[in-house]
Length: 419
Ligand SMILES: Cc1ncc(COP(=O)(O)O)c(C=O)c1O
Image (cartoon, rainbow, N blue to C red; front, side, top):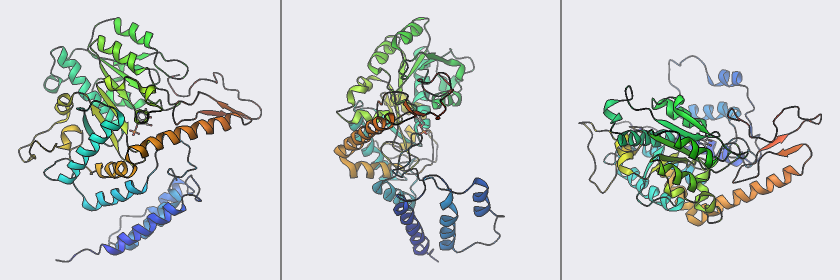
């Protein structure tokens, strides 16, 4: 048997990776090439003949470099984007090398074990119910989707409708209440789930984007229906956190399922200094968050948790004659994920949590929030800069005014389509 030459391409990748990482403090944050230049330098006709693998890697690294955005640089301040850290990157390299299909424990026992352990650590760290289930998905989009699939099935089952079998065509109507500042991935998940965005009832929010509990209570009381309430821990614009305890209490009084989209904000629950902002979060029915945001694990790495493991599993589980399952001591990851075959993304989460420990995560969140406060303080003292909302967590939302004045009406409120 002829063995592939692993060394040269992996050495080339190693060199290119270290060049990139060591260059982060100095390289421009944004891409320096235009899209058309990139297409020209990376593309050509489909090659008829192959090329030496190390040369492929070297030329890929060289041609891609001007099209890379240095999102993990300390000078990148856009969007809600995480970085990449040594334990996460190194574990990702191993995950790619080991090439485990993490769907099935029998096929990937180490990947399944790591997800089981890291899942338990995360539940403890975030203060969620100890018996919550967890799925390692691509991002908060799929975490929201997975949780809302479980929610949809549960609220319909309460009224005697098995949507898994009967589908949605003649099902009772579901209503979904969400703050006006909810993230667009909620709408997208509702589209994927066949509920449609028309089922969304927007709940008013205050100037910082927090859902108004009185409006929620009024809208919930308008009529009885299978209901899902989507709360948010960390709005994408200003980091606002909904009053979770009250929302959960009122929603549960109306037998609604409460889902918390905490793509980054849920991490604040890990630190004693911020935990009060998420008081009551553990009372929700499901939660979405990302490891690729605040935990700084490389993309893609999202997490979904559910307080009702049976419901979570029922919404995702799949069985096929050819699939063998491990004994009950090991969970099958595919029972908690919308994916079937997939990358073993738990290794990087495990390695990152192991490298940081609880105190490292607390320090990461606290330091980031303290720096955001400082950043806001310094920026708001500068000419022509207006702080749009007080800093809640790690986000600073400012407007830069032109010297001639900002002609836009409505300054002082959050940007975005919902406001
Ligand atoms: C509150 C919130 N929910 C969901 C998402 C979507 O997350 P992802 O891009 O990981 O799917 C984001 C992204 O920034 C977010 O801030």
